[in-house]
Structures are given as structure tokens and as C-alpha cells.
Image (cartoon, rainbow, N blue to C red; front, side, top):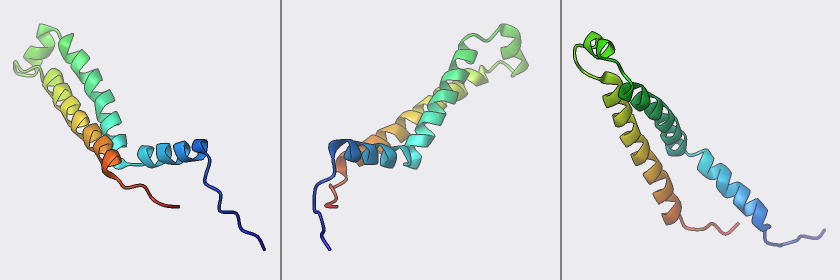
Length: 91
């Protein structure tokens, strides 16, 4: 019985890192909130006076979209900050 203690190739390491990052809930949440926040911000910026009047004078799409973009930025910041401070495993 022989064992090989060869180091994993660079492509295997990159794929493992990508999947670990993609599976992180902060990354998934950040991307989803960024997409929905961008859509709502655009809709709010293009809102008509009638749509704003229907929401009692508040451009709710714009404000909600901006809040979602801020939340997405925080999620993505912490997802990438975690990646920089995680020690390398010796597999």
C-alpha cells in the first residue's frame, strides 16, 4: 500500500476556495440584496409623481432600495473580511 503526500494543484485549491466562499451565507445574502436593491433603487429613481403620491408622498422604492444596497455592502464586506483573516488549513 502506497500513499502519496503530494500537494493539491493550484486549480483544486482555487476551486475549493471559490466554493467555500460561494457557500458562505454572507456572500449569498449580499449578492441577492444587491440585485434586489439595485432594481428597487432604479425603480424609485424613475418613479412618477402619481406613484409617489400613492405611497403617501414617500418614494418607498428608492429608500428601500438604498437600504438594501447598504445591507448588501455590509454583508459582502464581512464575507471578504472573513476570508482575509481565516488561517490556512494544512490539508
